[in-house]
Amino acid sequence: MKKIVITGGAGFIGSHIVDHFARHYPNAKITVFDKMTYAADIHNIMPLIETDRIELIVGDVCDLQKCYTLLKDCDLLIHAAAESHVDNSFGNSLEFSRTNVLGTHALMEAALKSSVPKIIHVSTDEVYGEVIEGRVDESAHLLPTNPYSASKAAADMVIQGYKKSFHLPVITVRSNNIFGIRQFPEKIIPKFLLLMMMGQKLPLHGTGQNMRHFLAAQDLCQALDILVQKGEIGQIYNIGTMDEYKNIEVAEMICALFDQNPKEAITYIDDRPFNDARYAITWEPLKALGWKPAIHLRDQLPDMARWYYDNFDRFAKNGEERINAPKLQKAA
Ligand SMILES: NC(=O)c1ccc[n+]([C@@H]2O[C@H](COP(=O)([O-])OP(=O)(O)OC[C@H]3O[C@@H](n4cnc5c(N)ncnc54)[C@H](O)[C@@H]3O)[C@@H](O)[C@H]2O)c1
Image: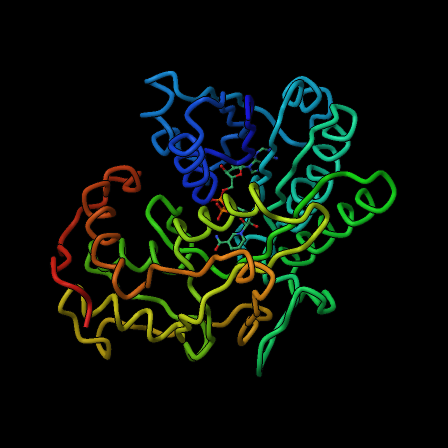
């Protein structure tokens, strides 16, 4: 592997993918392609830039010409760039279609013309829509329920067309919610951790009963690596975990980390226009390749809290101050 391109590599998941592939593919040149939206942070990849381990090209995946240049002689393309926050998609859905659908289309077109031999497309389990009971496999219908998941499902469809018509060598992955350090604090875990540090209440949507599975970013990267090595081109792979929590349980774990009484620390706010009660997937094809999740949210939460505490200034753009520190021991 001589050249690996990672789109969205300055964002949350992308930066973990960059870390993993920089470490495990020491002979590969790694290029991050990122528009550097509000969700990106140069600090996520700065140590690797400073040591010349990776290069950052700032650009938009919708820019076809730039994608052509980017993908010249590329051996592996991992596409993780996206508009990713469901709440934003209710008010700004055209931007989601532009980046997630048109951007994916442009990138795949450039990959086709550049004869990229292997592509990993990072999709989401949210394309299957709400799964109240049981779990769905990779053959389930796509039934997205909000503009974000609709744009991701549409991107998956564009790719499906390119696979069938042009034999584009793509593997699509659909994972659960991902947790880890460096996530922009619009998503529940980093948002609640930072609010706790500032002594503010945790605003839970609706009744807080919505369920989510939480998979560690490192486990996701391990799965991607196995798929790069052993995955079947053209296939779709779910990447999941059995670690499932109600949103209120996540809030309570965070309260415990800061010695706060959940009854006082949590407040309830209006729900999203539509809020899927639950997503749930199986991942037999990936399991058959030898992958299983290894890291649990409950175990990693104290370290994550500590990271957000130590990096508080990154997120305190308006001079906010830290009042509470997380306990060092594990959450109850
Ligand atoms: N976060 C999760 O829990 C989760 C779960 C399943 C799948 N996913 C998928 O994983 C991928 C990464 O998600 P994330 O949570 O890291 O998102 P993120 O919002 O943290 O990062 C997205 C990155 O993409 C970049 N980007 C946005 N628009 C771009 C454009 N037009 N051109 C180039 N770069 C652009 C941003 O600057 C940012 O660095 C997305 O495709 C998302 O749908 C996320």
